Amino acid sequence: MTDNDFLDSLLTPEEIARRITASSGVKMTARTVWEKARRIGVAKKIGRSPLIHLSDVPRLLEEETRDERRRRRSRIRTGADALSILQKARKKRVRP
Image (tube, rainbow, N blue to C red; front, side):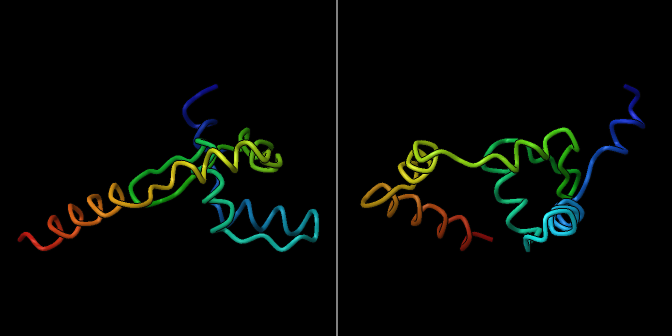
């Protein structure tokens, strides 16, 4: 596969959402596509442009298992740990 072939097979989340909606009739948004691509690790970015490889689209369409959803929720931090992270982020934002 040449570099040009690889670049031709990169799609934006908008293009993928449009294709899913057209082929299945299910309303899909670009944001939903991008969030799942990031979550499963197939998202790519060039500058500010989000891109997803055409070969990764079937992985986007796979249903997430209950265990995967549970693990993702357990990574969300709560309590004192979350408070310290928030305070550090606010300090960074205030500094010139």
